[in-house]
Amino acid sequence: MPTFSHLWLFSRVFTYPMAITLYLTTTTRPFNLGKFLHPYSSISGSKCRLLLPSPPPSNPPISSPAEAAVAYGAGEALVMEEVEVSPPEPMEIRVKVVCTSLCRSDITAWSQAPIFPRIFGHEASGIVESVGEGVTEFKEGDHVLTLFTGECMKCRHCTSGKSNICQELGLERKGVMHSDQKTRFSIKGKPIYHYCAVSSFSEYTVVHSGCALKVSSLAPLDKICLLSCGVSAGLGAAWNVADITKGSTVAIFGLGTVGLSVAQGAKQRGASRIIGVDINSEKLEKAKAFGITEFINPHDCNEPVQQVIKRMTDGGADYSFECIGDTGMVTTALQSCCDGWGVTVTLGVPKVNPEISAHYGLLLSGRTLRGSLYGGWRPKSDLHSLVDMYMRKEIQIDEFITHNLPFEDINKAFDLMVDGKCLRCVIHMPK
Image (tube, rainbow, N blue to C red):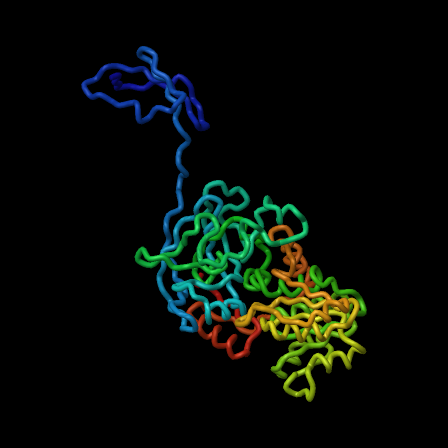
């Protein structure tokens, strides 16, 4: 076997793969070249032309400990734990979460989901800490919003221009990552499951690069985190899904963040009347700031609320929105619309009874029922526009934030949401 004691470089090459030529001499210590040889290397006499493979990354990401709020059972208080966050796999990024807000969908899933232990949270902003192989869109230090449903840009839906239901990075329901159906969180080697492939109730999280949106470093992360879900969902339902027209009448069932975002969108489109429906009359004053012109508390009515709305609007609203997560209320909203052209949009995530029941005559008479996910926005293609609108002060976000809490008080945020005492609680991670 050839052996060598000295190397002479015949060419200086600073890019990889690198070709070098070696002189081989005999020594008393044999050196096995086989393990170094690239398939295109060659040995001829006393010379060896060696093609070196590309080197590994200079500082490859490693697992990182992080504090996370872990849910161990349905409806149980979250437990602050130290978890291991794996490095990002190919086409993934690891994000240092800066702020995350609590969404009603987190409450719904936490109260009934069968998958535990789990880290919830999906409405968040942060800074890229490391990137996986193949990621070119992001680099360390980029500011991002997390996206609970992504955009691969390649599947039938993404290329259709008609849908935001990505076939590769759509809504993830099994508590794992899209790419390999595994988790990136663990405690003592045992997996901790994800929520919507985001899991922002952790100091660090790993998301697919198609489930993150790069944003300007000038945009305040503690405000624009709301665009990760609720505010975007409501504005998009008004603008993209219903396409509200000037002078129209609108009825909104449920005046939380999503419902009030619909109201904001309707106001900007020039709706003449925006009727808010909620069982909590204390929401009225806040709702006026977003465009609600009239308010109905069904508990104060002597007849079904749909009859009240039909009488108020001379036969029914032009548009109605179900923003509660109650399939029975979807039927009520449909009944509140006018014949001929009335449009009902459902945005809420139902806690129970996911099936909708309605008399066929409601549709036969010309009403339309439409579903809305993320307000119809293609998240990576479209949401930049909302960030820009906020920076130009064209849409309201700050007014939705009723509480700012440190991460250790996350259970207080859950209590406030369950008790109906907040719109959005923004949770601030340790710096």
